[in-house]
Length: 352
Image 1 (tube, rainbow, N blue to C red):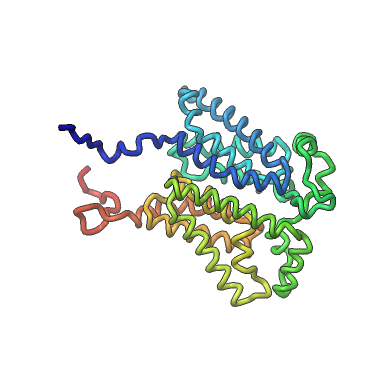
Image 2 (spheres, rainbow, N blue to C red):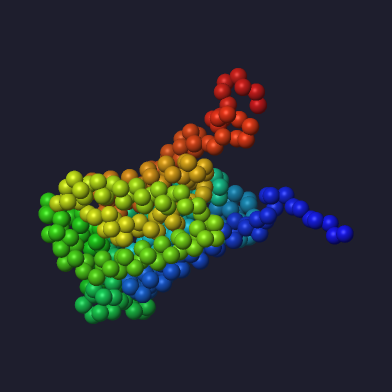
């Protein structure tokens, strides 16, 4: 009689290594990369290549200084994922040195200084993005017009994109324009219909372009959910909170507020919900905690977009909630089997 072989529960997913998870997340960004490249030109792809090179070099240098195995840690692809996320978030026309600065700062100061992967309290990609956004606001707010907007009915060619990134070619001036969020933010005081018309006048097809970009990242995010790389709690809570806040203020004062549809389909809403806020290291761990964490990010995105100094707010909202993640986890621990309530840490005098 054949013996039934039973393995321990924790060995059932032995093949799901860190490197596999990182590669799956990178693969899920491909739809967004393809759409961004089709609509805004080759700059995003070039940024990613520059970012990956800078991330690998920065991580290798720090690992060497820390006397750690370079090959072992580079093979987990966490540095590559940080570079890909930053390359996707940066405008396609930023100079190469800005990309290198953002990625190097993210790897060195937001990741390795804290001890490497698993020890960083803040999302490295968003730390790098926030640093260059605050330090270099002009190039960070110059997005290219999409293919259906620019006068020539075409995006920058690969050669022109290379020239723009490495030599700040003047051709960029004819292609850059305000994003829908930026256009709406600087039209305060107009009636909602007039404000929205102004957005369309400034960014025209960019509204539909950003819708396609967000839908591409939504598709990638749903793939991550399907393969159980992430759970639904944080993305749903984030998008739900953002939609509720937008709906409330739109009903209260439609002359100065954008619709929920506008908030959810422009900027980095889907990208932030599925690829940034779900970082397993800097976010919450319990399912209940993820709901509070996602809601906090969604509310902060709306607040910063509406009254803050920056049109989009995903990076700052995520970093602010990274501060709160340990606190949320402390008060949202699930009850252990056999206990009446969750144990929230040891008190003075408790035995170890």
